[in-house]
Length: 295
Image (cartoon, rainbow, N blue to C red; front, side, top):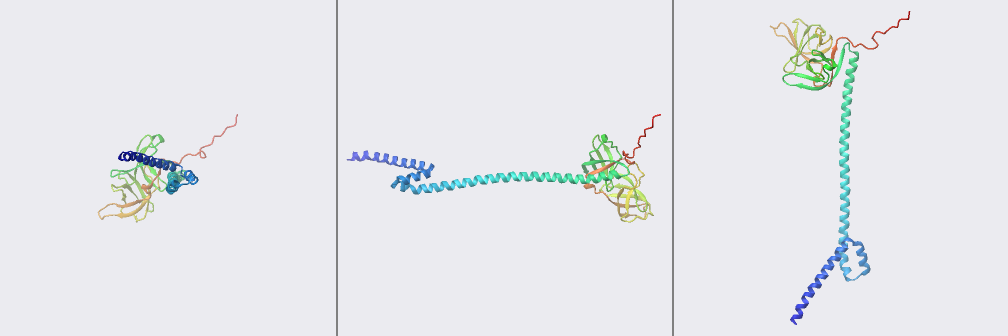
């Protein structure tokens, strides 16, 4: 009797394992094809189908939810990629818009220079400013014209508003221009109303002074200052600035004044270099050739 009990225990364990393994295998198959399996269970019926129908519905619902979530994730991923692409395109368009706006501003400024150049009573050469230096040692601009373009040292540099400075160093393709606010630049100026002359010179602090004005000159604050034309760098009558303040001590032989320049040196984009005091010779003003009749 005890022997039969011992032999029945392994058989029961084997049957239980087979039943559990078959159930697990059956459930795994149903996970892959839940709809087809449910239809099959409806046709077959039976207690086993009724037991598994509930879990299968839960599994199908989970599968449906997971599928919807995955689809939404893929859709969101696609929207994010499209958003990044649109952002990149927007940045490119903004950069292009800014470049075109900058070109339009430069073109407008140079159009003014060219219009002035066409009517000015002297020959000039237009140049772009490609560098600046405003250190404590000197105040200068670098222009994109040099010896190859006919630029020489000591040539005057102007803009539509008035005087900028003087060329001090020339390279083959570039030149250095010292501003009026540099202490190494000195030109002759003239009070436009009284015609009194003086020396315009910069200071180490970047200001501009007019020195050696006659002691009896009726100069007043606000008077315009122009070039006198007595040197080889600027012709007469180019605007320099206005008198901001007048200084004259009792022991001084001359008057002096602080000058506000007419040109804003920090906002210059282009300049004109004076290459000759004579106006350019146009094709219309050149003498025509007359053909003599044959003898």
